[in-house]
Length: 597
Image (cartoon, rainbow, N blue to C red):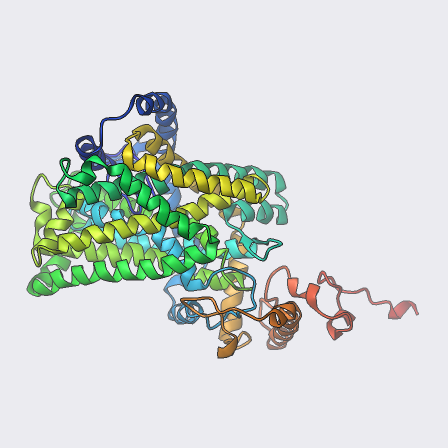
């Protein structure tokens, strides 16, 4: 996702974005001169954007001339807290094995409510975080903080896994099933309904509204205008620069994106999931192969590269601010790249076909790992092993391009393809996030969501052809502001999160929750469809299975006996079921009247 200036020496965007200063210097050359309307809008928004950005990205002066943004402390603190509070769940071998089965659809039925598979949700969320930030942002971090910065990028990615796990769990737990069978979920819903469930309804409504508003405005700039502009810029560079046909007709690129994105998003979450589940693996594998080719060609230098990373991480030799400067640069790059704490994972995974909230937590935890540990580390080693970070004058994208071209000059063409695909997939995921935020603000109005989609598509053309920097700055600030209500609400719901995740692991380990028979599994790349008869009886069958699992849990003496803390399966059991001899449909014990008879 997108980030903004942070009051630090190197202002960076997160996720699929390159550093702002680099972007603007390039756009001044390649973007057509702004129209008078553009300038008028930019001048109007500028003071608003400056005020909000200054508050969101306020930084504390640190020794060595460094500055530590408070929003970074807010995000990093959440990662450390939930990692410890959940007992390092994301790093346990048993959790990793279980997550691989969940990702392949082994624990979800095709009759479960939802729109997409776990893998499709994973791909959708990754499409919004993996991108130019992994290509250009890492290069800039190494140029600024030295090779050691990549070590702290990876460490922060490991910590962020627990936050994504928590977001996805809450996203499924407090989602709502619409009349047409689709789902609506995310921080808006778990802040409102989750906090209401623990006696804080007013706070929940305020935080939910704030999150939805920030999401609506944030994705408009970062998820479409900036993506369209950067894709057009990269294509113009590939075609010959300012004098090329694309360089003078960048709006055409925006128009093409408008058509392609429109074709996909009109199909809703299922079509977006289907598209990203194909694009993300392709572009990720393509980029990793290019990096591996460079590493293979310089295999004798690999040990030296890792030595430079390790020593640089703990000495900060030759870097302004020393070890503290290296740590801040690395952690900042990771926190703003994988978006752990911003809340988008809760939206993406709320659409999954499942009945067990914690299952999605074990899938979502992979997102920071893939983004900050795998792809960012690949970029870092590629840059370090070739030594291009020592060359002055090259920006992030150019630095990565130079490193890849040391093996094959035509790798620059593949990199351009990867950048365009990164941008396209980000547009798809962000359109879904914004649509759900608008739907929440307008009472799940389908009309409001359609109007938003039209506006989103129009702004793809505007973004490719214009350069309204204040709009982008405001969008950056609003996106990071999403983390404030989201993380605050998660702290209040920490016990709910722990009960779901630890209880689920306990029941899986004890064999209470088995894998679904293969012919009833939801699938991985494509969600398997259920017949009308299967869907008709799905709730009743689920209730009977859940009641049996609950009874087995009680028999085994497990701490967490309910398959869901709300025991919603009780609502679907037949009237004469034996469980109602001891409790009502809300799970409350029946009073023993035998003594009075």
